Structures are given as structure tokens and as C-alpha cells.
Length: 294
Image (cartoon, rainbow, N blue to C red; front, side, top):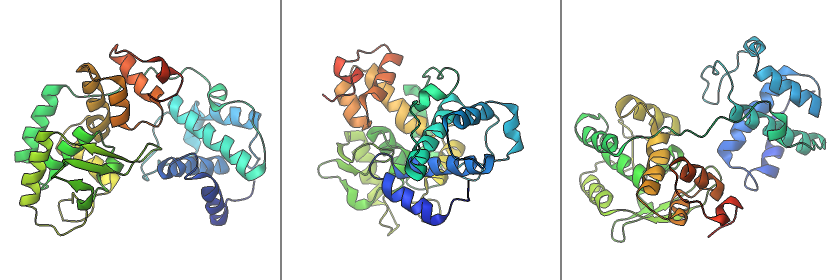
């Protein structure tokens, strides 16, 4: 298999991104394609993809010192979901680049069983303590407001860091969210407490950046920088647990309807919301199992 060129990447991206997968997912897929290229000189096929999955699940993977998407060392082992992502990328690559149709679904190629859904999340007491500590102990002005918005609006780090001042209307207490990871853009109503925190933040804000939240130096946050900051300064559970797992589970535990949680979380498919609902023994409507909409 010849080396993948930037022109091929651009063509592949133009044909896929925006139609079936998000930019972030594409970047992860492309990383697996490049890894596969290093691993074999053959075009993708079912036997080779099965071999690649076996390789990722073996000690031989240490022969290839790969890094993850942020340039950090790869994990000691690849989870079932990571290997499924790898095979999904390569099945798509085989079809788009070589016209090779792999009839099996990625889930049928990857060996083993998926890990049980077990999201890391914070208790309500943890949330209160983290918010209180952010007001006094964080070295970044505006962090308490960012935490409040992230939790209230159920934001991914990638969604939080791109919020602009114009996305927020305190008069109506609404926030326009540009979605990531294949979910939907949405305008959300913020709670009174979050709105009060934001008013205080904006009244005393000195930055003239268009971004709603800025880092310690007044510059724009990146997804990785915010995630690192959150883990170091606020809670070891991580920003995804704070902004996604925790508020989704808290809503379900508080008796919010499945449809309300699904819409506010902006999941691409209700089956994702259903995983959370089953985790806390909340009711899952029939339309969610079928992938429909309320």
C-alpha cells in the first residue's frame, strides 16, 4: 500500500466529513488509517482487518510506539471501543479509497465483548464543593462561570471552548451551542443560578476577546488545555465527566423525562441517552430503542 498523501486525505475528508462523521471523529479515524498504513503494505480486506484487531489486542502492539491524537503515548492496551473505532475507520477507508466492500460490520470483526457502560460521574455534593472551590482557589478568572455553564448546558469541552459572547443572551437566559461529535446545534435555556453567575462574571470581565471564556493569560482555550486545567485545578474525574456524564445522570435521577434529557444532551441517537437511563434504572421509551425521535 503506497503512502497516503495529503491530497488523498483532503479528498477523503471532503467526501465523508459533514455527511456521516464529525471533524473530531474524522481526525481520530485518520490517525487509525495512518497507523494501519505503518502496520501493513496490503490493501484493507476482511482477513487483514481481523489480523489488525488481533494485533491491537496483543503484546506485539508495543513494536509500534504510536501516540494518541494529542501526541501523547498510546495506552498500554486498546479497549474494545477503541478497536471498534479503528476497524470502523478502516472499513470506511477501504470503501472510499479502494472500492473494497467489507460485508461485516465493525462490531462483528472486533473480538471480545464491549465494556459495560459505567460512566464516571460526580455526586451532587461533589458538584457543590467543586463550584465553591472554583470561586476561591482557581487561578483563572471566569472558571466558576465556565463550570456552571458546562454543567447546566451539558457541554463537551470542545463545545465550551468555542462559545462566543454573542452566543449568550442573559435577557432571555439562552445559550446557542454549536454542537460537536455529530450532535445537533441547539439553543438552551440556562437556569437562574447559572445566569446569575454569568452576570457577575460579565460585569467584572476585563478581556475583550470574542470568546465567552478565556484562559489564565486571556487567550482562547483549546479543548485539551481546558481538559488539563479542569483535571489539575478542579476535579480528577475530568471535564467530560463534569459536563456530560454528571448532569445527564443527575437529570435522570431527578425524574426529568427521557425526551427532555435526550434533547438537552443533544445526543445524535436516543440509544446513547438510553445507556444512561438504563444505568440509573430510568424508563426508556420504545421509540428510543428503535433509534427514532420523540
